[in-house]
Length: 264
Image 1 (tube, rainbow, N blue to C red):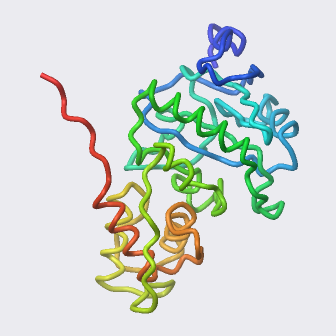
Image 2 (spheres, one colour):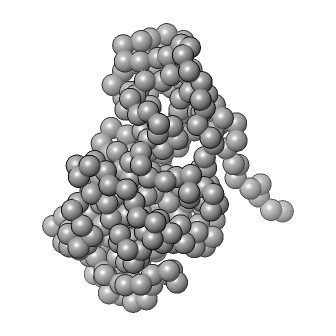
């Protein structure tokens, strides 16, 4: 953070009309790219107050643009013009500086360490309203509304398999297809190798996941498949690419929105 960039200066007023409270964090820096992604997280802590305290602590080296409390209160912590430190080591579509190209929303929820509680209805309603506002102002493409686990599958599992992506999609937020229901058939798992594994990894990379393109189903492949399942096939998250997982991935690729062509 440069001397001319201070939390109070950059967060003098909320960026979104959905904001209820300002709680500036000093943990931010200058962006190096235009915003074209929205990344959703859970806090993974016992409550919103503890998470806000951590995100405001200079030594923590973490922050977010927004935090949504359990009751739906929206807190802004970093100005959208600044690069918040929410995604860490991550990548999507071959770009590794996720923080520069994204807005990060933390959703107060204990996460897997606290039994992955359900997300309250009021909280999700507030998340939907905030996301809709951000997406409209930044023209974020549907398939670039992502989970932290999508961009950092080796490290993160948030916002988790219980996050209601279908509810967001029904409100026009994010890219989703119905889970394929295929039972049985061939599956791929840790230790497998060959052309089917290479084809699976090529499809995951085509959609945006950061994955090495070789023909071995290694630990990275298992992590990426599990991340894909958490978001798009949450009925079973096991890192095994069964027929339902592969068919869901194919449907997502086939229905993926495209960038608008340049205007003359």
